[in-house]
Length: 305
Image (cartoon, rainbow, N blue to C red):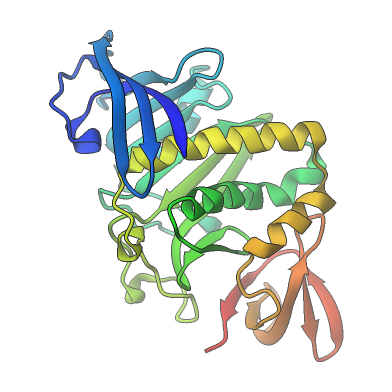
């Protein structure tokens, strides 16, 4: 995987000697770990702290494919920072935020997201998709990241509705929030650490893992920039030529537990063992129960031990 990069030099990311006002330009080849070729540094204007939080604004790549990236150290959450910038009209579509750690990271259903330094905590503004794509969008994000991880030699799987698994362990999750015509997508990905089993929201949930367990030794930025670029490409292609039925068909090989017996926690109904059959064109799941085939539009699925 190869992409053009233009970024502030940072020894925690690239292992290079740097000056805080330098900009890194060149090519980065991602093959399990970073390899830098042909980079130069040039001066970039420093930006002042905002609300007592130093933010770094940078352009990654060159026009017309450049990406706007905002980085910060510890903050409440990358989602909150993205929403704040969007509310100030400083966060256009495909702009993204990447932070070092979060004190109030959140996942699905406002669950706390364990956020120590070293993992990926990013949010980006994505285009408002047509309503027909509404319940599929988190799966589109998950598929894009799964394809990046596959390029690193891993065998990721997508656990409906918004989780990423490697080796049966949860390594990441997706969160989508929308207000009016603004849509912010968040991604958390465990690179070097994962929550303890006692910290998981349910004893039925798969164990948490990190990519370092599976031999991945890259930095958050190494994964984030290719992910945003790939997602932008996927969304553009989907908007121009795709349809939900085609997407769901392409998604099927990436799904965890397909054709397997799972425990379904559908809100308002008792947990029950079912056979996971697939995903519908509107993002629901189809399962085989003792009463026949049923469709569920919300809930959680867990592996049966």
